[in-house]
Length: 427
Image (cartoon, rainbow, N blue to C red; front, top):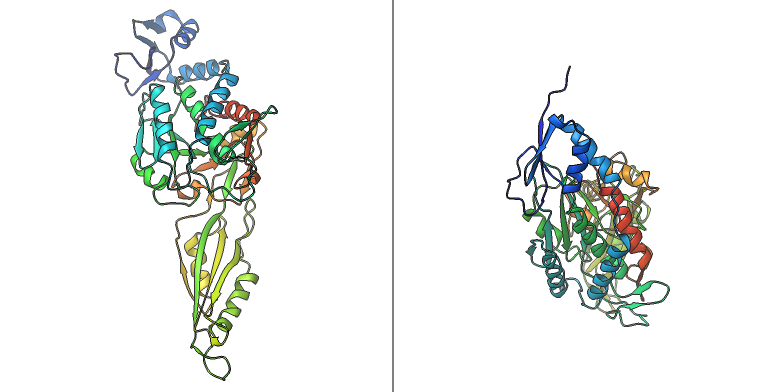
């Protein structure tokens, strides 16, 4: 059956064209329109001052668009230099969790100086690509602007960016996750000046390090529907396609106080021993090929007021790292079947995440030599109700350490890889 022809209108000037964008329109730079014109028959294409119109099957135009973008080049060193200057500025602005206002101000001002409109809620700052079209899928580029407090052992001022001759940039948050914040922003600003088969949203979120409720989940309801996200975290630019979730339990046993010298009272410490042993020894049946088994660790215990008083209460804390085979609610229900003490979950909201390796974005990363893996560390992925992967410059092992650093060449590599993965992507 002959393919039905569909008229595709292609705008030339993506920001200043007075022509409204219609449902069957694509917004392209002038040189690409001319390239398409050269490959079309004369009767199938004509132009006016702001508009090229092609009367041909739409998928043929889209194929030519993809081929043109394959041949496009980017000034990666200049983009990396701009990203590095931004990162230095961010390092110099203390932005501990819940105290990110000045860093958010800086980012918002920078984006607006690029001629882009911003949105903001609390200390979360975002920007939508121009000509946003709800008929297209939307890709979110996200990283966080908050940092942990400086740990002991820093030999340098954590808030003074120091760039050494070997290209190593020191500073708190340089690796986790400032390098991702600035790399993704440069990629966003560049891709916004091209036409893609998807919309873009850039979101710099806050309170990630503490999974705060004023962070990403505070901002997401303000954004259009999202189909997929790339979360910038230090992964050496390999895609983490699965991530462990987190649930923290407060467990309590009650007894009866008494004098330790006499045979009286009911010792609450003895009541928790079997439950602590169960948490140590139990193995959940389902094991993830990417994340391994669910991991449970008793990390804190507290009881007693003085040496000669039988404690009437004993509490302990359990850190549980879930895999994608179980929801946190499922794990909690199973745990309650096996312990005698009272257990309360602080939250069920930090779930494990997983995206199929066959996803087109993952496959584009694989085609560039990137290796998918499962990440044991938590990120804002846990709070995203849509598919995502975690991928960014730097090494996870540098995070939350003294003399944290990033190599400038890692920022340059990240920008180049992000562009290769995203430019012309379809999902």
